[in-house]
Length: 48
Image: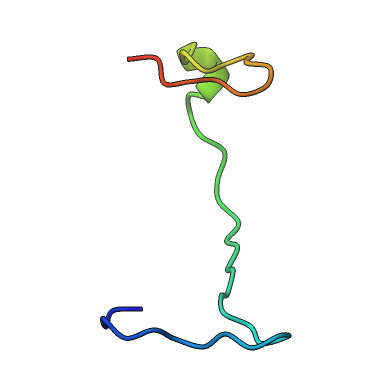
């Protein structure tokens, strides 16, 4: 909603669209990068 006015959303009315694209495998995976969030269990807060 880009206006200051409220909008009405009715039951069973779509409000979003998802589009999936098939991509190529990365040369370096996130596991190979040893990212700071790898292997987390449950909710993880930001690690700055």
